[in-house]
Image (tube, rainbow over all chains, first blue to last red; front, side):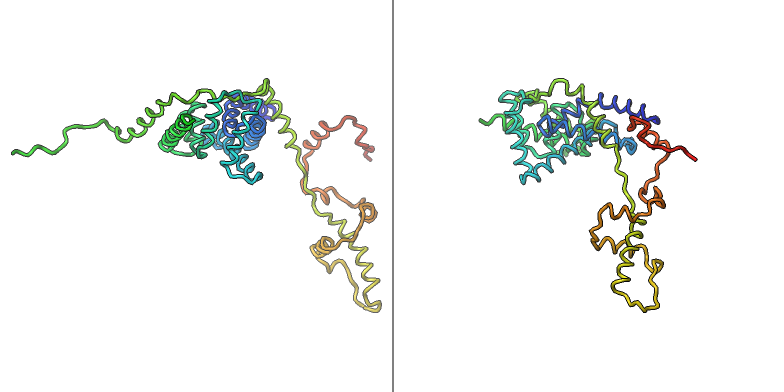
Length: 170
Length: 170
């Protein structure tokens, strides 16, 4: 990647390869398309600017996932601070707005599922989404989040129990 | 009664207990039938197809750098000459044998003098006092450009060569 035009071509391939996976990863954290779009673009820009510093001590996609996760979580924290809300209040507000969101096509049970996920602590929410929807392996999630596989399995199991209990409520 | 041999004759496979927790949690996780598999999120048509181009545009915007300016050293000296003469005329002893020269003032003293006092000078006033013919590019810009960077910039931003108003070299 010495010549600028080959670097740009390589970056284009990277974007095309990971854009969809990273999009949905971010979307499940921030829930709305426009916010996801901003965060996704910022993620790739950060990747582009810092790729020379990537030491290869993890897989490239784990590194990119980590950047995407941090960007999304930072976005939510800034938003809650700006609005003077707690993190939970913001989460609930974002879920409430889903019903009117033109890019949410879910039925009642899927909306209830998002409400259930919104009640989870941050780590459990991330692990649940990455395991259940994104179907990542525990080892991959461990590389991204920096949590042990055993800890992730416990978080996932707890998350599932809470979601099931929430869905069974009237 | 004869005592039974208390040594346990049975053996468990190697690593069995270490792996037990994880296997149990995996099995428990497979028991979740009530959670919908799709989360109901939709995406604008063509969004992912255009993403690469949008990121490229954003990168091009962020790559335009702002060059920091050094302090106008020669400007300070030029205006200092006016202020010092004014002070000399207004406040000093005409008969004093002492001469005030700029050599006795540190450049930092001159700079702080102008930073701390507002003389209400317009840009035209300053331009009249600046020794333009003596100004070097290094007086204004701290970053030195390579010729290649300058040629690239001109190539991308110049529509008509005549705009440069170049004169014939002697």
